Image 1 (cartoon, rainbow, N blue to C red):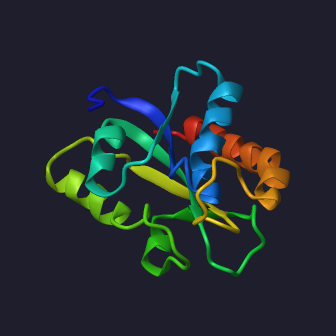
Image 2: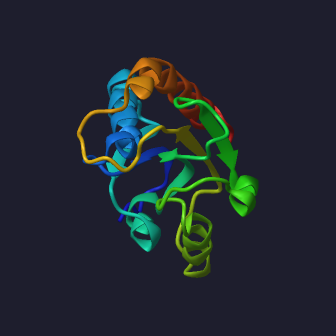
Length: 162
């Protein structure tokens, strides 16, 4: 568990063998390459969810979660930029968002150093269910734009006052 207070964590969620569900993992890998060794930002990925996320997020001031979502209300590749207020009425399906709000609340109740700020960058996907290591063509086309948006959001979080 991270016990030192670091500025920002970018955490990619997903399943690397389920077509578009891997988008969060693939995006944060590229974000990590682009940001390099920025002292105020850690970039990690996991296939864990729920309470297991505590092992990743404790000790950070800000958290940026990157994951897939399928709402059917936007084109594949659209990035839904959500904050804590959006969790109450989260549309679409993704197993990774289940319990994010509760996980953060539990961490606080346990007296753990939880992020004061967090956002979720949920990437609209086309096919999160087919077993494949490849993204759908729609997400492949949008990939660089998605990474650019995540880098901008991360930079904004990392430069925000504590």
